[in-house]
Image 1 (cartoon, one colour):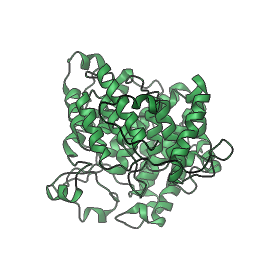
Image 2 (image 1 turned 180 degrees about the horizontal axis):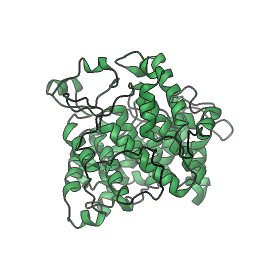
Image 3 (image 1 turned 180 degrees about the vertical axis):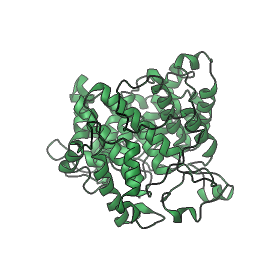
Image 4 (image 1 turned 135 degrees about the vertical axis):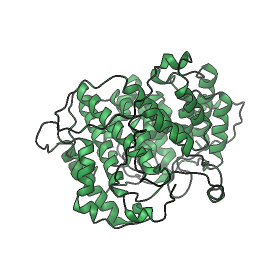
Amino acid sequence: MADNTHDNTDYTVTDKAKMTLGHAPAGLYLPGIDETTHKEAVRLCARDFLEHHVFFNDRGFHNHLNHHLLSVFSLGAPAKRLQEVFDQNKEILLPSHSPMDVDITTENFTEHFSNERCYPNYVSFFQRELDAAGDNWKAVACDYFFDPRVFPLGMSGIFHPFIQLGYGLEFESKTIVATALAQTCVHSSTFKTMFSEHVFADICTEELEDDNHGLSLMQILDKMRQDPLSISMEFSAVPSSKVSITDAAERLAIKYSNLWSVPTTKEGISAKYHELLSVVALVYGSMTRPGYKLLLHFAVMHCVTSAYFLPIYFDCLPIERQAQILKAHCAVVLATFALHGSPELYITPEISSKDTHCTVSDLQNNVNNQWLDVFSGAIASNDMHVPKVVRTLWRGSLLYSFPSKLTFDNDYTLPPPVNWLYLARITVDTIDFSSFRDPQQQAKEGKRFWTFGMVGHDKFWDTYPKE
């Protein structure tokens, strides 16, 4: 840590950082990914680890460099674009700093939670713990994440610690996993009680209605809109800053996540993940009221990008914990939905039309260019989140090539079909804002960015532009 002396020809950083990356996942093994791009991705992730802090300002905004880098890498970006992504991101990041005079151990590791100055100390601690675990390092990492003292922090910050750990597990990088666990420990908690040990245990012990499947997520969203607590929420331009709104959103999430049943079977986990990913994608693409310019919401976007990693977590967890992490993700999604006014969904024919399915071999053989064109746009985007959204939507398209094996009763309202390609294309075509230029100047130029605010409240639309 605290090493900022490298240039673009220095490959010693890989060993200094102990940085390794597994190859891109088989489901995303796309044209353009080769030994050269892999070598560059490793080098640049190593530089990020050595040179930059976990946050990029004093407000706790997260360093997204390796998220951006690994998402475009896995979509097939050339080495030149990987370097551009690194160079763009580094301009907004804080330098790494030296460790505090603190020795973090298994006995005292909870004593410095939420102290971001101890980030390098936590990284060193978790590197030692993972190295000591040998081949069992993924299980040890997950044990720390699921520690009831750690878990509330890991599910905070619109999923950022969860996402960082997901990248580390996906690319089998102990170094990135160590940074993720360290980020988790220095994070502040978003929720007051939802992930406390007793409340989360209650959430995972479902109170089912009518049948053994509970309510579907589409039914739960409808009930949340009609809940008196949701209806009585006051409007705020920045709802996350109003304690009354955040408290109400958390209460709604606790109440309704308890009604979504997750069977502890392989087929049950798969079916419920299908359902969650579809509903999150539909909410993401369907919040724009008729007659208004297309809206893509910043917080809901993070619900989409984080959902990508759930199957990666599943591969590392026993079945009971798979159900728990799926329930936890759902609870945060519902809290996010409630926080922004439990908006109505306006599902257009384009969003629910038949998706364009094509296999990885189709893409590699250049059989169907539609997804490749979207990937190219995502790679070229200067918004650090766009390629992550596209990657998740591509996972959804692949996933729905294999129907769920779990059947539901007729009164269990499953989401309509999702045109994943359409959602990916409108993301690339709509978000043309750069994460690395002056936002006020870009607004003057008419650049489109993610939307913030209570889109479920009528007052939001009083100032939102019409078509």
